[in-house]
Length: 78
Image (tube, rainbow, N blue to C red; front, side, top):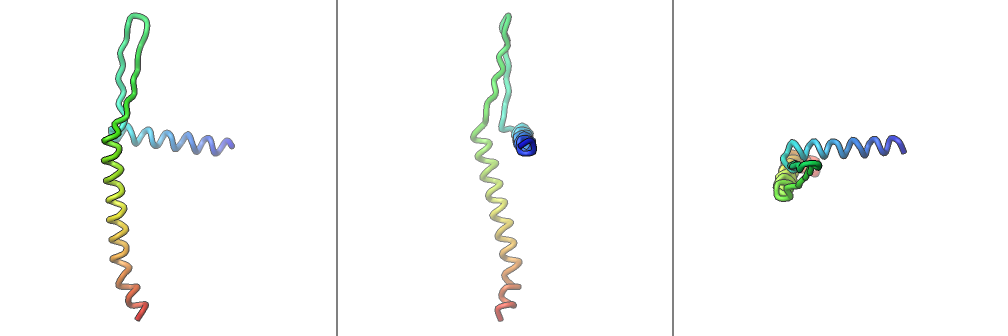
């Protein structure tokens, strides 16, 4: 159970770090006389753009792998 919580905390930390690096999260703060307000916002459009880019990149890599394997497969079938 302890390892599972540690793994979950590690995953959350990696996603948060990646999100800050990629510009997905934004923080703003303001203060009154006796209180401070911190706001976190998520840029859904940026997340979607980055997700689409990642999917396209993975699909391109998959196609390249298929193209490299195709001649070897054809020779094996002959």
